[in-house]
Image 1 (cartoon, rainbow, N blue to C red):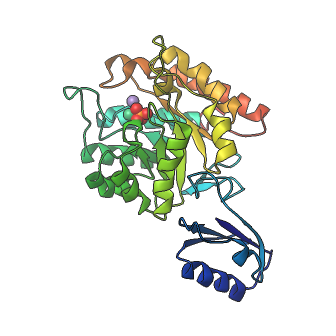
Image 2 (cartoon, helix red, strand yellow):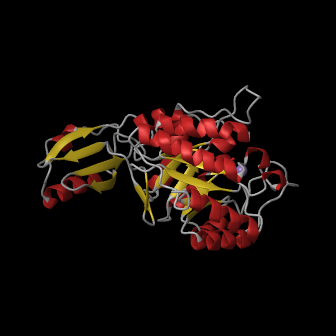
Image 3 (cartoon, helix red, strand yellow):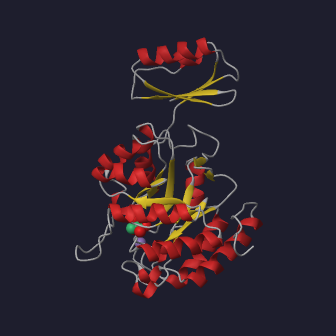
Amino acid sequence: MIVVFRPGAEEVRIQDVIERLNEYGFDVHRSSGVNQTVLGAIGVKPEFDPRNIRVMDGVAEVYRVTEPYKFASRSWKKENTVIDVGGVPIGGEEIVVMAGPCSVEDEQQIEDTAAHISACGAAFLRGGAFKPRTSPYSFQGLGEDGLKLLRAAADRHGLKTITEVMEVGQVEPVARYADIVQIGARNMQNFPLLKEVGKLRKPVFLKRGPSATTEEWLMSAEYVLSEGNPHVMLCERGIRTFETYTRNTLDLSAVPVIKKRSHLPIIVDPSHGTGIRGKVIPMARAAVAAGADGIMVEVHPNPDMAKSDGPQSLYFEQFVDLMAQVRLIARAIGRVVRDAPALA
Ligand code: PEP
Ligand code: MN
């Protein structure tokens, strides 16, 4: 249930309502804007009559949130959430670009990539140090050494970092080196992991599970939000369908669907979404046109020798083209992709 106060409602009135809701046994979460306060009352109380709250002083409106997710819903928060990641806003006018290799492999690889993507206007360096691989015989990542290499390369080029955490025990080291903590598609419903990152104050990047409905995905976001971490962004990375000519089917309709249902930023990953480098640029363009708040793209200095996801990783020249194209599309819809400092 949501309780909306009149603009400028006095603090004592707000406290009265919080007290009353607590008496009824609700768990109360507060969101205060510039001149309006909203309370979210969580709990199933079939015998409770919302009119008891509606009549209290200072209250403008009381309504039930019909969706099973509460804090993730537009009903709870009407305006878009903008997450400030060390001065880079995600979810505002700017469309952010996150780029880098699938895995951090060695110092030269991540350094060359960081130099290139920052010269093209990307804001975030991605790269996995703990890799969720389908085969136990495939490269599993460099672990903490990979985190250090990622951080150092990003710092040398003025970039922020995003990297994946696969289990509860990795949350602390990953959060130490990363600006955004990524939950991979395979872990979208790893509830203990979601709860753990919900205790962080770092932004969380929640990838959609390969066979998750939008509702299941938003319920996973709710796990993080309900632990008290409001900095959650969603990532569409393709779902499993009957199609075989692409690795996954990139569900771009998720962008407007999420925008309607939720206030959280949505990023699109056309690399895992298609699995084929030749399909990445068109789908990145489409993602921006559809209203995504950012794109995550795999780029590698030598994709043919990559230790993971080479076939979907862009060559450096392709990344230059991608940036130029998405910049134009962003402008056409009243948004911006930052300029390339070296190519301006
Ligand atoms: C990744 O970003 O490298 C990755 C493993 O992605 P996903 O979880 O979407 O498969
Ligand atoms: Mn990958």
